[in-house]
Length: 98
Image (tube, rainbow, N blue to C red; front, side):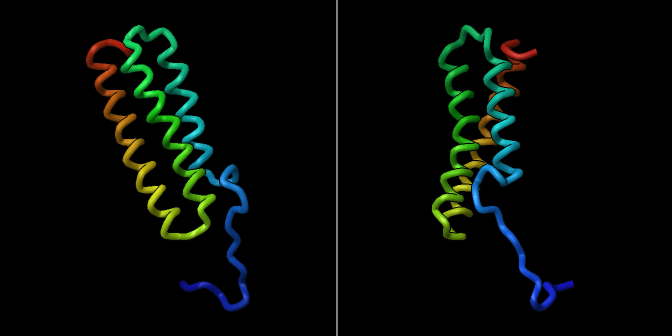
C-alpha cells in the first residue's frame, strides 16, 4: 500500500498544528496544575521544567526544518517525557501526588 502517484502528502506548516505538540502542551498544563500546592520546590520546579521542555523541544525541532534535527528533538522530548513519568511515580510514592 504505497503512496499513489500524484497524491500530495501534506505536513504541518506550524508546530501548533502538530497533535504531538498539542498533547505535550496539555501535559505541561496538567503537571503545572497538579503541583500547585507542592512545597518541595526543587521537585516541583524540576518536574514543571521537564514537562515544559517536552513541548518546547517538539517546537524547536520542527522549526529547524530538517528531518534529522526534528528527529533529534523528538528524541529529546521522548526522554523528557520519560523523566516526567518517572517523577510522577516518585511523587506518588511520597504522597506529593495522590
